[in-house]
Length: 166
Image (cartoon, rainbow, N blue to C red; front, side, top):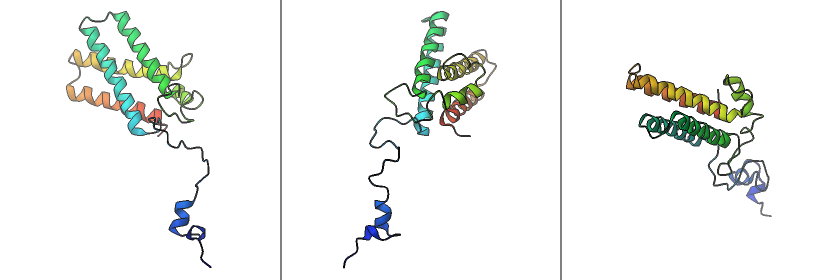
C-alpha cells in the first residue's frame, strides 16, 4: 500500500498542500497595487508631495493664481484621499481602507478631520505641512537639509498612519 505523502502530517508535501481550495479572504491573482503594501503607500504619498511642490512652483512662477493653486491642492487631496478610502478601483483596498477603520484613525490624528472626508482631510493637512516647509525654505528660514528632513518626516508619518502601523 502506497501512502500519498500529502496525507502524512509534517511532510513538506502536506505543508505545500495545506490551505489549497480554501478562500481565506486574501485577494488572489489581483494585479492591482495593494494599499497594504508599504512601498505602494509610500510611493503614493511621495507622489502627492511632488504634486504639491509642483503646484507651489506653478504658483510662484505666476502660472496659477492663489485660488487656482488652492483648488488644485484640494482636488489632489480628494483624489489621494479617495484612493486610501478604497474608492479607486485601480488599487486593491483592504478592509482597513474605509471610513470606519482608517477614517476613524485619521479623525483621531488630524484636528480638522471632523465634518469632511477623512482621506481628504489627511492629505489637506499633509499639503499644508509641505507648503509651510516650502515657504520657510523659500524665506531661507530652513536649510536644504532641514527642509528635506521635515518633508521626509511628514511623508513617513502619513505613510505610517495610512498603513495602520504604530
